[in-house]
Image 1 (cartoon, rainbow, N blue to C red):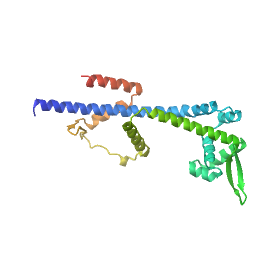
Image 2 (image 1 turned 45 degrees about the vertical axis):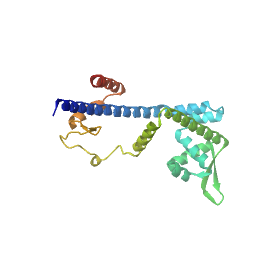
Image 3 (image 1 turned 180 degrees about the vertical axis):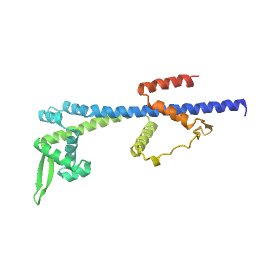
Length: 242
């Protein structure tokens, strides 16, 4: 092998290693962002939505209801508003709310004057629910909130070009369909001592060992977002800027 060929192979191997490290860094960064989003939604999402609805109505009765309403109560109001008159069984099946929860929530909403219950003339056991005028205001306000959020999401995603949107749509679809808690027999483990082979541009092979890559991945997963940014910058300086 000529010196030029050796240099080309070494450069290719180095590029393959850089790609592996950067990919691992980015995956860990994405996982951290997802965790941050989940925490923010759990901590602030419900309160932010509640504040928005309270700001966009002047009805004192509606405001008082929103101060105490749970997300599940609003979901039941939505379910009734979209399908009234509707019974509890339909609400449970169609919107995935447990039947016991539907019974408790509809009873509470009726006591608060948000919905009204009525029995069928020929079947006193079946109860249908409708929104009261106050319930209708709450339903419309919640629909306005969804439209507001939808517009903000569309505006945010509009900053990306068509190819990026296509990739994001495919990625989110795959993530939604993936199983993150797989059985051990479903996992594919590399053979002991087998080299990891990764083609770069269809021609260059990486020579990292399984144990070497595993050690690096373990270290990367221990870093927080700040540590990842620092590690990424150090790798860029050490390898890519030379």
